[in-house]
Length: 124
Image (cartoon, rainbow, N blue to C red):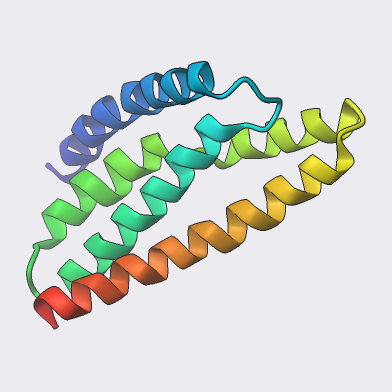
């Protein structure tokens, strides 16, 4: 039954990633991959809150499978982040490529920690 939770979460996360990326990209006329950045940081935040909720007993493991592994796994995208970084570097925008790596990693990890801290305040 656990696999079904992951499938359902992924079935929601994948189109959500696509639609979010599409919406953000339409609003930002830039070579910087704002859509991928947005979904990755949002997924890190959600996963931080979720991990904290499970740690403090506010959510069962099944919710972690549904939302963490399924939804966040399909919402976030390391492969697209890597591809877009390579595309930026290959097109001569090396500074933007480096900024994408640094800002994405720092902001993503920061969002995960912020989410975990919020969970501790709520349920810890």
